Length: 322
Image 1 (cartoon, rainbow, N blue to C red):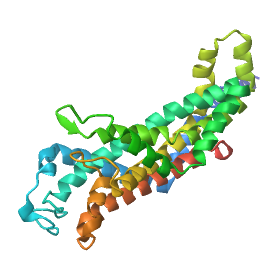
Image 2: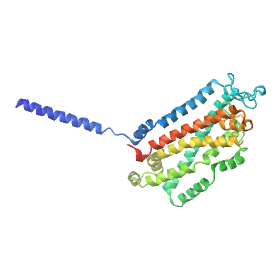
Image 3: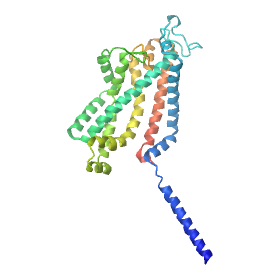
Image 4: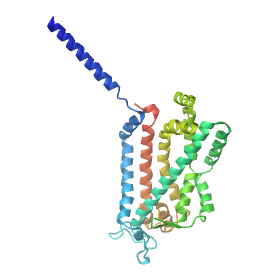
């Protein structure tokens, strides 16, 4: 009897232990963000994109620490259009400037323009999408008709008109000891303010769905102010599609700056970008090294960002979260 009782008690205790163990495991939940990042880590092309983009950023950042901007802007007509050599790894341009140094500093400016323009695009597009989706009515219709009207006009055409109008309104300036062309600021504003429409439509669609959800209705019934409701309850749930759109937008912004630079309407000297280096080379196409290296960096950057954007889109797709 005693032995049986002890065995029963041991069996009961082991059952309790197993129940406790199972319950403790069940309490460990995984959020959608954790699932998304886990899927992103398993996306091989996205990882390749991150590695490639990190290499490009490392090239321009570390290179700018080793090579001063004065080297990139120094010209010597006696060495113009020299092919790649041990002294000038990427060759020289039409006035004898070192293309390796200019690719470093031009890449820094191209990446900065792309990221800053997309940040402006995100702020403007998210704000308009939030207001249009939450308020609705006449204001929603007005804002969306403006967005659709701007989407019907090619962005490059809008940018060309804006550059013509605003290029001479801002003087050249110095910042942190560096001299910047006025078109540097104009380019950021133009690219950002002519590409907010898609972000606004994405955010509006998300808000129209979210504002009918139970947690938003509960927060509204508790008297939550509209500003707090938008900032703390609705906006965080719009981040995933906005992040994907913004990531893909960086590549588009860099390409648009390159288009304008090739047409001679981009950032002007003394500020170098990959786009205006290619723009300077159109009369010297036989000197392949003049345009090849900045074009290669633009292609690789766009490729890396598109890989990252595809990975983010797959990772944050709610239908594929597992």
